Amino acid sequence: MRCLPMNQKLNLLILLTFTTLFTIGCPGGGGGGAGLGLIALLGGGGGGDVPAPKLEVEYEGVSRESGATLNLGSEPVNTADGKTGTVTIKNTGNVAITLPGSPNIVALSGTDASQFTVTQPATSTLAAGASAVFTLNFKPTTTGAKTAIIKIQSSDAAVASFQFNLTGTAETARPRLAVSVAATQISENGNYGMGSVEIDSSGTAVTFTVKNTGSAVANLDGPPAVSSTNANFALNLGGFPTTIAANASATFTIQFSPTGASGSKTSNISVSYDGSYAFLFTVSGTGTPKPVPTIAISHNSSSFTTGGSIPTFGVVWPTITSSAKTVTISNTGTATMTGITLSKPSGDTGDFTISAFSTGATLAAGASGTFTIQFAPSTTGARAAVVRVATTNGSNGSASSADLNVSGTGKTGADILVSWTGTNEKAANATDGGYKVCYSQTSGFTAVHNGTTIICADVPNTGGTTPVSKVISVPTYGNWYFKVYSYGKYNTTGGSPSAQTSAVNVPST
Image 1: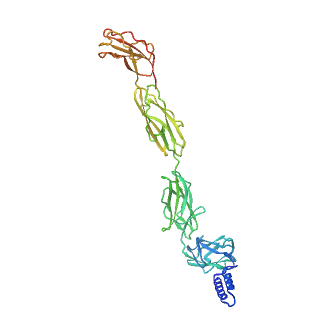
Image 2: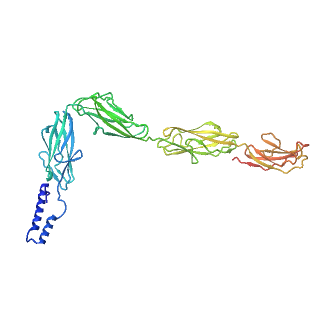
Image 3: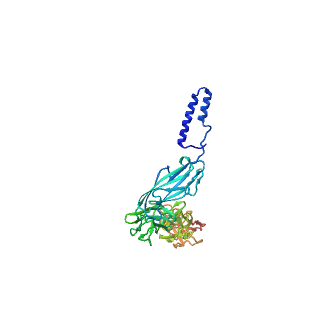
């Protein structure tokens, strides 16, 4: 069944209503017959929409009714390109639609038809849901308001002849600039994306073409005729002219070189001409984080990245080297760390030793290396020094330096308790009497004090009973041998020394 135009549908409705009323009132028809006739007429004999084409026309993305006016705006006379608009023909129905216009699918007529041109759609048949486009071009040769008519014939019975009224205003000849990158046209107040570039690096220079699409010479302002509001987008106007003839072009470049913080960057670009005109657009780009090394220093899971005091080496005999403390240097950044150096800038530098760093002067991103520190006191007493870890770029790309304070104590002696049995030496327990404890690291030594290899210590009578033990502090580690003898007021040389004791071992740690 065909879909009827609206006026025909209205007539049918009136007819059906009239017929139904007439049938109900007809004598002799019978109530049952009247009821059946009514049901059949109102039921329509079945359900569902009747398949049909449906023409829809869009301009600038908006659906337009037949009879609408399309205003193509203003255009200077005698431009090379004119002003262009795109129209889309759609079939929103559920069967194919034909566009039978001949010789042209889209017919152009009217008073100023010569001021407009149409580029025909590529097909005269549109399947259900399909579309086709055609372009309008306004290219006036004389000034003033211009009008024309567009007609599209179709197999949609509801709009068998679709019509547009075209208007445009032709201005006097003047310059007009347009900007593009290759085949990409940049709209007035539009944006061109420059992509992503690493901070403190430079992207590839992009060439922008400025074309005079008007019909008179464009006198460029400046210099500079082109300006940027953000130094991250560097202009190169080398060779850029002072004038651009109608339909002629000139080029300049912009290079995106982001600095500072990463993130989005934008600049306003203006191409100024003839004192009061400008083509304005923006360029944008993203500055991505620059790969940088980042140092981390640790010892026994504690952080020393900014320096600090390494736990003390404790008490160590002079000339003995302590166990090693391991320090780890890690690169937690995203680029290679370079110029790694270890030094001892101050303190008792000779008493501490540092090994070479395990990876040398560089450390790859995400990698770690180690070095060790040892304490070897040259003398007794407290000793301290500074171990410095430095790089040329470890602080997120900048030089870094961290001071590790190290300390230890040179051991002065070890205490040994020496005990003996009291002697019968006359007056040993009297005034001016007592005992001598002699010790040496030489076995079988003669108990004569010399202050270096043999040392003797007095245990004098203090008035009463003389002690029979003494704590001896030996000056170094190793085996020590001891002899004890008594002396008295009348025998100052004393009796014979005791037999040598077994060796007492003083450990080096």
